[in-house]
Image 1 (cartoon, one colour):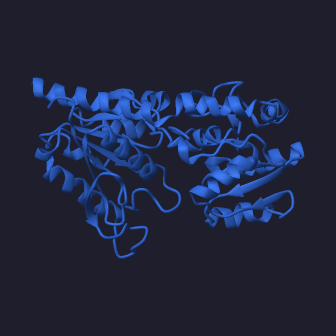
Image 2: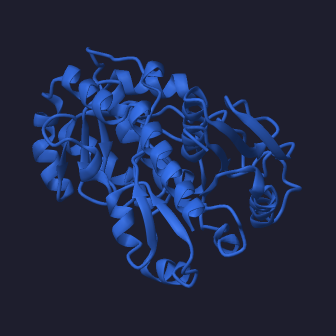
Image 3: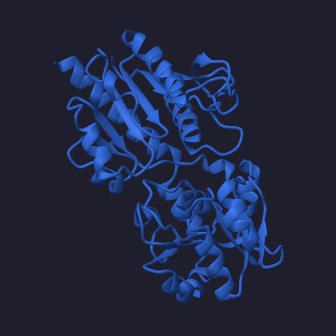
Length: 346
């Protein structure tokens, strides 16, 4: 095998890889595939036909189920995509399946002759982790230490943080006059809390995410077009532009998350973060360097001036040190090689 690995990355088939707009899993898969290919590995991505990733693409579907309403139920689409990789297991040294909601690849763990790794991109509940533990031969890769702790009792092969293509994020030394909330409109993301923070601290706030029922019912009535404005869903260039103009990113989570890619994106633009201490936040925010974390909304409001005073060049430097793609790709390549070698040694 040498240093050359045959790697299958099984992406969700909701949309292309990389995604046309938002989609952190598809973005991560595209970035990892390109970096591994550049290192000389033979990478196949199981995805939709519209994918333009820098690797070989096996297209299970012409379009994703977010684009084609006839592809239902979505779980069947994901299972068909996973099984397409399993049927070709002999062609690979390792198969790594990414899961949007639940690790549907788990039942294949004892059936696949090639090492099969699973990654979920949320913070599992204890009942979820207990259910997954029924597959004793399943091996996971965690995206944060917090997620790994939530999967106690499961076999964790490694913990590897996501990365960014930092060349696509422009450093902005001089921001505008508004704070930014960037993320899905859900109660757990804390958008109402972000509006409360902006109003109580006297700052303008820009909201950016795809409109949904929660936005229309709970958030839109609070958007006045003056202090609180809505920018809609952003493509990549829009994300970079809005992050660069923001004085700070507000991240007042109400429910812990396994990662938080927007924290890395903010750092890449030089924008400090004001966040609540939940989930993986303390792993990703360098305290007093790339932002500050707080125990409550009241504490965040009191500490917001110290966040706004942070050196934006130091924020960008943190991103370059911690969220560079070389770090992530090298870690995955080493992990894949170790897993493949373990199988050969059996």
